[in-house]
Image (tube, one colour):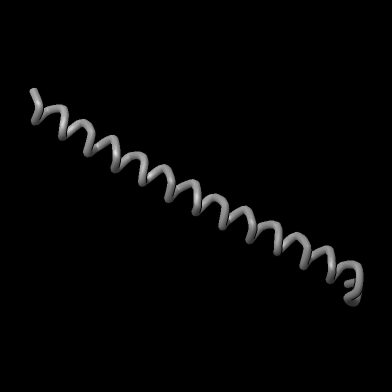
Length: 50
């Protein structure tokens, strides 16, 4: 009984860690997207219009 509980808790902790990492990765990707957008706006505003 206790062993099963420990295994379940362990996998639960792993899932939480995984979700947290995925969330952080998503944040990084979003901030990169924002940077690219602002750079594109900056270039389209100031740069040569092709």
